[in-house]
Length: 301
Image (cartoon, rainbow, N blue to C red; front, top):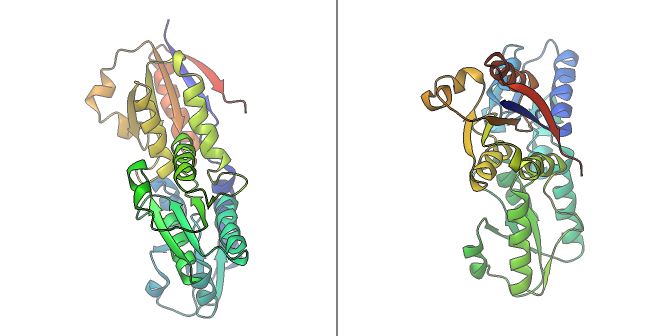
């Protein structure tokens, strides 16, 4: 008997749902205006296509917005406060659709600077939209920042006095926890927020894979190829010794010959925080038609 396990939670998290709902409200409110979204709202191509079909234009910087009569929205990944403030002076209307967990980091930056901390170590992926904006915000406020993502980089942290440690919200929870512990062992003056910056949705989606790892041999991860939190799910599956397939949807997976000829008795399916639920359910349905029995495994705190 073969099982296809639906790992929960998966699909849209609170922050993604909120950003999508808010952009829909902006579209309704400004039905006669051209709306520009700075960067992809979330890292999923289907979501991007959905809004393109509704007239939203996607660009990477406010300099690419051609008209002062435009409406500008900033993505769920957040935006440096000085860029947001600049945009409010340039365009007809400006909205920030950033995830509340990302907002928490900007609040922490402000708090630490007000406390006299002017040095930061940021754990994040170079080039990621969230990371780039946080680093820009720190630097704009006259503080120093050192970005790392690996234990080997810790000895190169250039600070001797007090500094604060922040992290990208979508990284591997265990990795960030380990890095912070290693930093604090080598730098006694290192300060961290009371609560880690990894968002709850990221933690839970990683946790359900780890908790039920003995139930399945194969892991199928559904989501955008640019999604940081989705790629972390793939990495966790590999680290646990699973055969992992990663696709944006069923049609993507069906192009993989190895996927089509897999021979494992138990399979688990999960999706990133920006993956539409229908993309996950379509994969589960495909397995059910092949005779797999569908069951749900859910993460509980």
